[in-house]
Amino acid sequence: MNRSQRKLLILLFVFLCVTTIIFNHDQCQLCSNITTIYKHIWIEQALKQIPTCIPDDRPRQRALLYTLQEWTHFAQKYNIRYWIAYKTLVGYVQRHALLPHDSDIDLLIMAQDTAQLFQFSHLNFSSIYEFRIHPEWYIVEETKRSYFHSEGIHFIAPNARFINRKDSIHLNIWPMYDYHPDQTRMKNNSEAMLTQYDKNSKWKSTPKEWTFPLEKCLFSGIKVWCPAHPEKLVANIYGPISVNISSTECINGSWTNFVEHKTTKKTTIMNNQNMSTTQMTKAQTTAIRLNDDDDLIEKALEHIPICTPKDRPRQRNLLTMLQAWSHLAEQHRIPYWISYGTLVG
Image 1 (cartoon, helix red, strand yellow):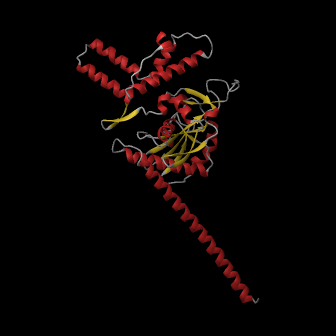
Image 2 (tube, one colour):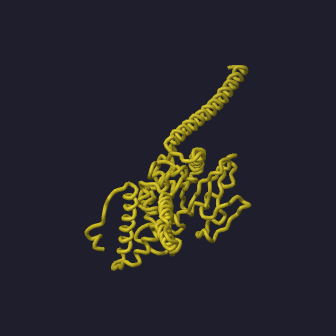
Image 3 (tube, helix red, strand yellow):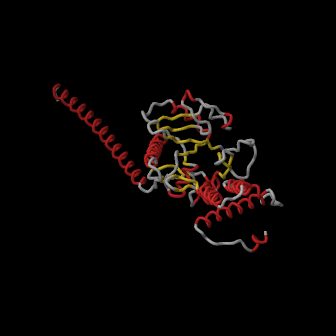
């Protein structure tokens, strides 16, 4: 092989290498684009199954789902362990989808994992999305944290937020602790527990096995991570009734808590009956108290004696289930009455 042939062979080899690189890059880009389009189609199909009540619902729902999808890409790329939680988890349990009235997405991470996320908060990875971590995330009590408005930190309870600047939508990233913040870490428990905020910003502990191992699940057409026993967690935070029934309904063109709606309706009826001021005040007070089932149950428990350590949890569970049943029976107009030992009580 002479010098000219060798030179030609080298040039041909270089040409083939460059062509292969360009082809593979274009092929990867094409595959990526096809995958993105495919995922968008899934979201649009999922949106058709989510009801609307007000004109702003569909744009908000779409923005939330696209933001969640972007988060899943971000979390997968940087190996961030998370799972859906709170009202987002309620939506998954009730309908495997976004709650139609929800205004944000809730996620949980182990609190100690927050430190590893700081490196990502400075990334300029998108012109639309940004990742913000609270500078005082290591402070457990939210009341002891501060706002940092100049740094774009307009929150104190979540440890971080994944923000969609374009649509003013965000994902709250809440902390989960492997100990109870009000107890010493050295306290021995017979069962591994995890602790998070409940709906009233108080600590709520649940068995670790309810959360781990995490499982992949489909939420409005988006693959996300879910806890091992989502129904148990929803029932524990929001009550057993929330596993099957939403507390918010579309009434007269607006999303309304049906308990509040019933209270307003009762008040209107009482007004029409020209009740006296004293009677009205008493009725309103009673109606307001009915809004918080948990408080009613706790007050009732104060008058029930106990004998063994297991009595109070059992009593609380029984009353909670009875309260859930009463809501269900009232909503679906199911006639019933208490009997036997319950009637004796």
